[in-house]
Length: 460
Image (cartoon, rainbow, N blue to C red; front, side):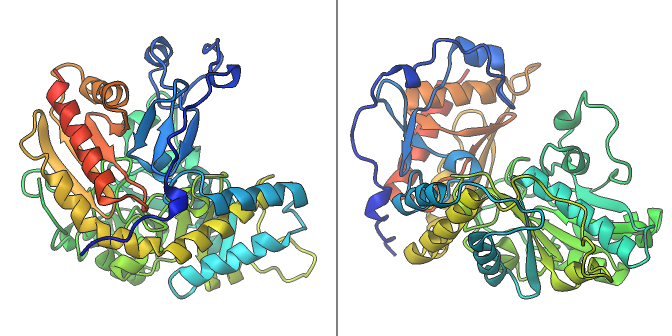
């Protein structure tokens, strides 16, 4: 079946970028880049000065295909006119409003829109500014909920190997990527227990389609409950698809079994959908794809199409109501941020949800998934490739590392893609990650995959 043509306003015009001082800074030393080899970057910088549709441009006017949706966030493509206009209008009307004791109309509208998209029962939204803040917020809500219920002994959290829940100390403590926590000292107590990654590297490599089973991986939660006491665990938090850890799908029975075990022990189940939300897996939330309703969903990234920072937590009504104080003048929850529900972010969020709906982008992503997966699997047998994983519009091409230099081949792939193939890819160690926007055409997919093939052929 042919896919619909992307909307006209997602197609970037062939115009050069002016080489003006604003796009050509002469001093790179002051900026400390996150998750980046700074010395190597400053020796050979990769500067992006404009974006529209599926592309970036550099200061010389070179057109570069964005193969990673910004950073898992620009699901509708760059600089969509309706989203840009909504942000501009909001800045002129109301640039800021406090969220402590006050609100503004658009944040209320956005909360209602998100609750309507979420699985039934998740009726309340607490806003923050990023996925990292969303993870920490969910942790505080979980502990606060049980304290309000007279069960403060429920303070532990269970997460998963190779998981990523942000970089603040709460989410960092949950995360299962050791390098992220290395060198930062003691982490949050009660976050030590990890479920295994639901993937067998011997059996599951190159699986083209969904993995069967998975209940045995979820059953590891029963062992943890027996070890520490299920009645001391506040919540289990998992990504429906492991994103930053290398694109690992949930097997068919995995999340359902986790839900069953959590219910048996009275444990809250939290889905970290910062990456999987807003069409990445073909639905508003991955919870819908897998038919499992958690007690909380963390979100960020695609909620504003990456245009303005925003994150949040969708919460079951009974959790929200547990925080209700006896007195009308008393504060419900002692938590929040200066920029919670920022007017520009709320305007961007509403416009983004409108765009997803009007262009049918979630449905489009679901139709594109098998075509994208089949295209990526043509890289099987290419130089250095040892595994390919794909779910939704996300894929990982795992490469054999260079002996004694883990991560070097991945960084070479990043540079080669950018400078030689006019392509932006993501790397996770020695794994190339592809995350096309939901507006991608089949031609864009082919161009991304062939660019990666050329990169693989050039690597040492």
